Length: 195
Image (cartoon, rainbow, N blue to C red; front, side):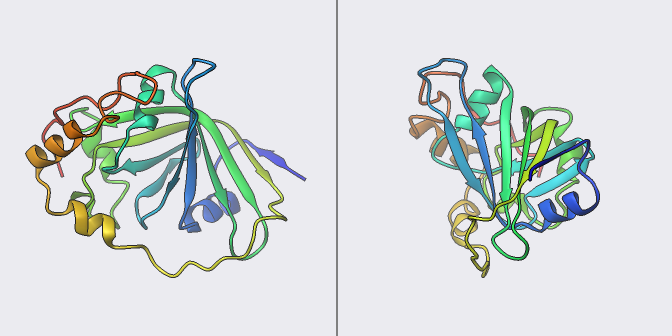
């Protein structure tokens, strides 16, 4: 049976930090807007900041739905599934914020990710989530799957970009500066990287 937690610590924190994959879900306020669900990976790109705060690095991609939704309403859910070991699903429902590269907090937040070189991935923002509800559930129907390794394709693609070329890449994409539903997305051009 599911359980509600007061904070992210102990076995719960260990479980979250050990997962190589998690999912994010956001949506606009509009009832007919597009719900966004995204898988996130890359070892070292997720961090538990404190008992009620988690963060992950938001890398280059073809849309910026999470950023747009967070700018509009801040609602976000993160989910981890146990694909190995005992069955478990953990969800953190919370309030999120996209901390952009020119935010004074950006550089300090980046210190929570010492095991990844974000300059290889076209770092756009750091998504910070304050937990409002933390729950787990059984996960009995989640299949066993093995994690082999991270793909190197993202780093191979974006490591060659500098700030100007990354901004030019984003400006060519239809749903970076504006979401699928017309919400403000990632502000362009990108501010200079502090990485």
